[in-house]
Structures are given as C-alpha cells and as structure tokens.
Image (cartoon, rainbow, N blue to C red; front, side):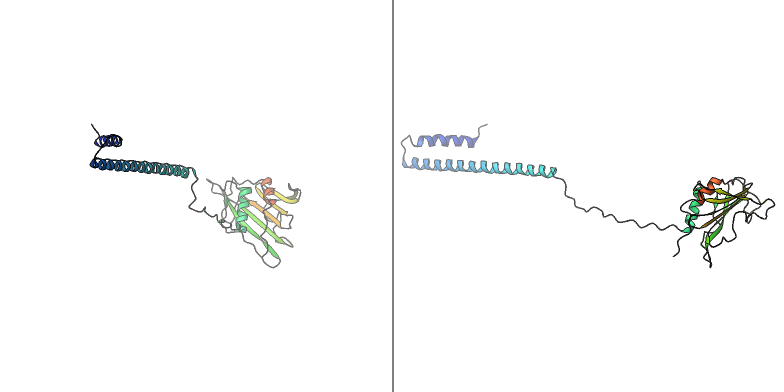
Length: 250
C-alpha cells in the first residue's frame, strides 16, 4: 500500500532539487518557493515532534526512577508509638492474707485441708497487749472428723496464758513440753501426746508464737481427723519464716 504523504514529500524534494538547475517561468519560480516553504515547515515540525517525544520519554523515565526510589525509602511513621503507662501499684497484703498464705505454705501446700471459716486473723490491741489468737479448721476429703490449729502471735510483757503445755493440761494424759533448738539455733518448746502437739517460740524481734495442734476440732465435732499429722519440721519452718510478724504500728 502506497503512503501518499511519503510520496508527496519525495516528489517535493525531487522538484526542489531541480529548481536551481532548470530554467523556469515566473509561475514556476513561485511554485518552487512554495515547495521550499512547505519543506522547511515540515522539517521544523518534525524536529519539534522529535524534541517533544524526547522530553516525554525523559519525563516518564524520571517518574519511574522516582517511584523506584520511593519504594526503597523506609515508610514514614504516621502514628506515634503507644506511650506505656505504669501499672497500678499492687495493694499491700493484709495481715489476714499473710497468715493464711504462711499456713498454706508450711502446713497445706496443696490447699486441700485448711478451713478458715471461723473468721479472719485480727490484731487485738488491748491495753498492754497486742496480738492475734485464732482457731483454724482442718478437713480431709472422705472423712467425717475435723482437726484444728490454734495459732497465737503476740507481743506483750507476758504471754496471755498460751504457753507450751497449757492447752492440753486438763487431759488425762497431758502434753509434756521440752526445750528444743530450732534450725536457726534459737530455743523453743515442744510437746507431743499422740497427734496432739503444743509449741511455743520467741522470735528474734520479741514476738511470741504459740501453736496447738488438735486432731479433734472440739467446738464442732467429737470425731478426730485421721489424716492430720503435723511434723516438727513443719512447725519449725513456720515459726522461723521471716514473713511471720505482726503488722507495724501506725
């Protein structure tokens, strides 16, 4: 298929090449001038198109380079990192919570036997006396009997009647106490009669600890707990636990 525009351009170029060689009339001279003018305009337009195309190609290439560079750059954070706030301060442990935790720790780590239904450990502040005295039940699954702890911790000039041997003194076979040396090399008093136990100890800070262990919780039952068996080692560890102490005076 013949490109008419291309054919016209070639004919114009050929005619222009003969303009200066062949003799011609005035009309032919004018026609030659018009041919030259059209040729110049065509060449000027083609040059402009080529330049515009080059600029367009350069612009597109630069745009691609900028895009690639933008992809390589790390993204700018648009959100601020969350500000950490200090957690609420833990509430201090109550004296009742402390005593329960220490009894579980030393006598019932599995938390299956101790029964604190008789009420919380409270500090009595009568004139000349400051301390606590409380009974704690002991239950075992599958048996009807119930045992008991009597726990006393006090600071006073004289213990309030709870000394080793005082709790079971009316028994037909009372508990006989003897002095022992605890693992911290401090003296204590302990007595056993069967599974009945009494123990007393003066802590380094002067507080007096008293513990009675009775396999029968006599306020509640006449049946003993056959599974309640407390060792000397358990009593000594409880007595010498550094956390065992009355709360400070306010």
